[in-house]
Length: 176
Image (cartoon, rainbow, N blue to C red):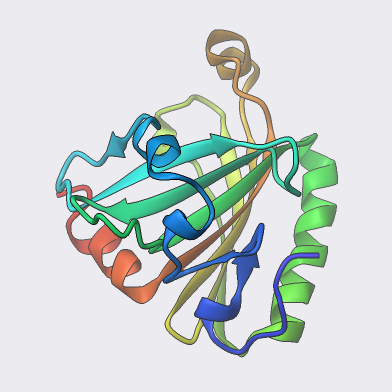
């Protein structure tokens, strides 16, 4: 369902796309450049773009790319599906097992993120799997009624695959 047979993050795929691939192999330059770019507050070396998809396993796919990279190399990518929270937890268990069965997981970290209480009672149930050259993060968002109504945010299943270079940047520069 999720990954191709792999023991390296570059072999893990979402919609046939892997870390290190050029988005030009999948989309034309105009499609990529027409996407709204989301930059981080502390450093703009990377940005995120989103693609909605009806042909994918995931309703939304996003990619993190380096600023001014004309090859549009993927450093991180994620897939998201809107799904009820309790159902998400069941799918999350299956996804974790599939990743562990295929990739050499070095470590596992499980936690609840409360988004630093920025979104009321909203939280995310997160599992991070450290693998060769990066990280797989599988999580279920549970948005409070207030933010579901206010922002039209819905509970969702998410899987993100990130290169170690991107994780280092995210942890050390993105929010500084």
